[in-house]
Image (cartoon, rainbow, N blue to C red; front, side, top):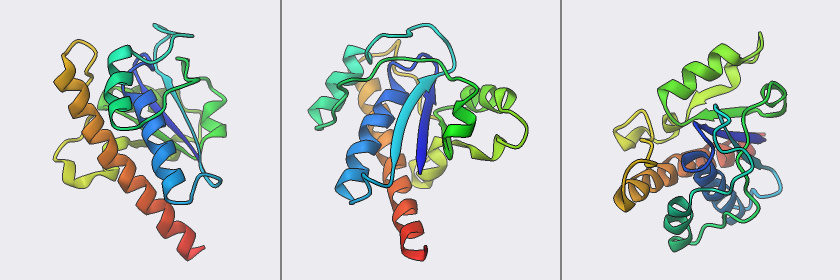
Length: 158
């Protein structure tokens, strides 16, 4: 399965989702069955690495951000990825408007995979402090656990 995380500039939430899911999928023995990437809805930070604060929060928990560079979503992503995960409602709306006919079913709100999180959106930590990055990471870990559980269940029923 090919999974794409999407946030605004592809420097905080979506690269964190990419790093977290990559590690969790590997730990669950799914690394060879899952491809993970991330992008942004806007071109603000193309070519830049993830925000240093996002990296610091993730690296404290053992996540690897090496090699990640921000990019903007491309029309081909709607064909290439099986699951396109919007970090908040604004991203969800933008992705639905941009999706070619017949590809909207691939787009989901990320926190659908963490029903116990008590939120619909992963808040943008960019203008906040360290605690905002920790909250975003907590929510992203919860959603990624849900995705791994779904993938393991699909593997068992296949």
